[in-house]
Amino acid sequence: MTHINDAEIACGLKQRAEEAAKTPERSLLERVIAVRKTILELRDEGHATGQIKKWLGEENLHIGEGTLRNYIARIASAERQAWKEGIQETSDADILRICKGIVRAKIVHPNGSDLRVERLASSPAPRQIAPPTAKERAPSLSFSSFAPRPDDEL
Image 1: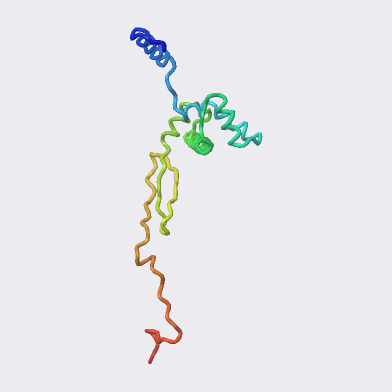
Image 2 (image 1 turned 90 degrees about the vertical axis):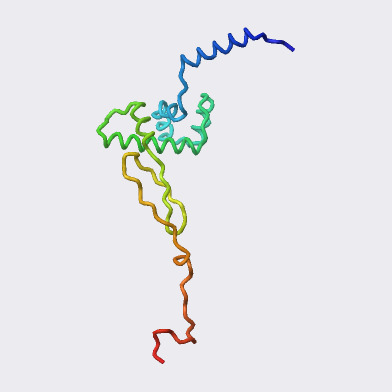
């Protein structure tokens, strides 16, 4: 077993810190934004998202297929928003700024299911719909044809 002395460990740590300072970490979203045009070209050519995900992994950009689909949708939404803002040529920084402004909101539908919507952080919050009360969920009472109804004359 080889023993490494403390000076070698300290030197190695300093080298790693210097390398990290030279190349700041970028988020996964930033890395996908940087190659968005190529990803969209590949999709336009008919390549599946799963295949593109595999190729990105081979290029050391490891991402889940669902996450890639989500990022593609967010980037497309950001590009539409940029167009509305009058930005004709969108830079990576523009797309990232708009993507970070997109907020996921959860709306509860009256039947109790969740609806997910996207909105810009600057837009008003979507209206929250309260779940149905127990009285609203209760089945309606139906009267038997043999029993008198309350509105029947006796």
